[in-house]
Length: 311
Ligand code: ASP
Image 1 (cartoon, rainbow, N blue to C red):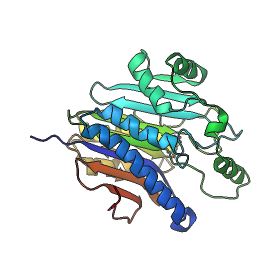
Image 2 (image 1 turned 90 degrees about the horizontal axis):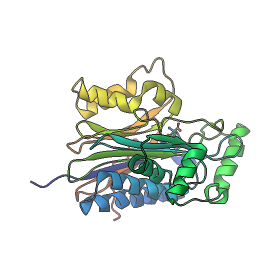
Image 3 (image 1 turned 60 degrees about the horizontal axis):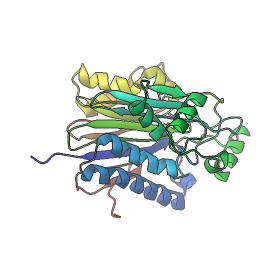
């Protein structure tokens, strides 16, 4: 029997309108999503692992200054930049995560290296950077990460000249031919956040989770709310213990304690059968997926059909 392989990615979810985003930027996001999706898909197609596929997809978005991860990450109140990332392997439930690093080119690769080459799950700030250097990961200076656009955007946010703060965390979930699930998430956090703030993305069970038997999840949105609702693990638990299929579990996870926990919560999820859910309550979610050799699904707006011609 032929085995399914699937990858789904997100480049964040937010409340911009079509007019605010603009056609040129929309096209650039589409291209960025396609590049990231295919970087992961090619690994799966050649029989590679889900964990390598999610890392490759996320790295591609970390390289792209459009997204709020790696290059082009959003800036904190003091114009500093700090990255959080996590990765989880559904095969053995091993996980690696990093928070508050400023000079690591690929925070997701650091998270994977922590998972594979250290006895720990989460390393933070200076200690994490020292470990990255010890492992000979690529480091970059401030000028690489801080783009003009993000500096301007922060200044506007501080003067309250705009309603929506920059988000666009990135993430990926994948299923490989051996039936393994994996999830990865990487972010520059919230624009204008307090320096030192850590969001949901590197918290295993909040923004990132994977277990081969049940589901792989990567969240985006208001990190404080996602952490309090433990969204990724909640989705897992609804499927595992309540035996809900992915679609119903996703709807329920979106609404758990919604009356008490504010903030937008959005996620992508993939089950062992290869079903994908994109759940979001914002105006848009940058998203894409590809199953086996089926046509690519790539969409931004709620009402997008997701048909994508370009290859
Ligand atoms: N969840 C991220 C954080 O709170 C931000 C986002 O996904 O847009 O750091």
